[in-house]
Image (cartoon, rainbow, N blue to C red; front, side, top):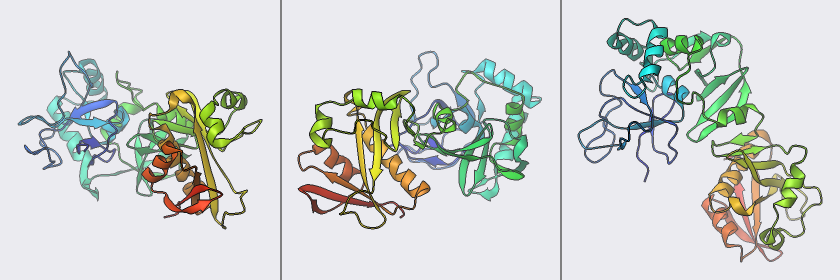
Length: 349
């Protein structure tokens, strides 16, 4: 069971298995039972290295501060944290200088007043001109947190940045405190990753991403790689395959193409609004959870970008991995079609 110590850009503590690239704390928030009792304990909210001088970072030690995790530096700054003066001394000094504070206490008092309020969930938002926001800032749009990157906004998720949308014009509600916006606007860059690697992926035109797996439209030359990735498992469950495969999306993980996901409508047994989903991962990519993530992202794409209402799967009764995936993702078994088990999953609910 994951602990409730992952922080969103709005500063909310959530439970998730994703961890992130930045550590931090805002005092002792948990009880001896490791349950969160308060939002913060004091004004000193800091963002730290994941590792420092070999120290072991216990997330919820008895009687000590609560260890928190952030996707990246931009998330930590949006949540109202600033660099730690001990494990990130140089980052802290440069941040402090750009913030124009007279002391650490003044900096923490100012940030505290800028992050807490009654706008949403105990947070204070700051109306700002969109075109004045620097890369790495966060805004609230349609109830979701979006990262500003170039002329685009990227939606934050616990595992990384997902779909992009154009940066709007006019006024927006900035989540990142004004002091941190000023520092980011100066060109400040600390030693920790400002933006999670999924950010550039989403900016490059990814169909969907959860920070671990990314779906991208096929590029010239990808067909050859998809054919080279076929093995006995492919031919056993999917048949000979297309001579020039052109799936809806290629699956990427850790910077490598590792498979594909697709859907089609060319089956007599499909009802109006239904599509049949297929997927395949290269041998080296199996057993890592990529297939579940890829199909889940395809469902996101179907819901967000198409008018289709139901995704279906046909799975051979002996295909144990695909049967497990269908049930893990909530597909409901509806009988058989041509000797294969037939599953459905609503995508508009």
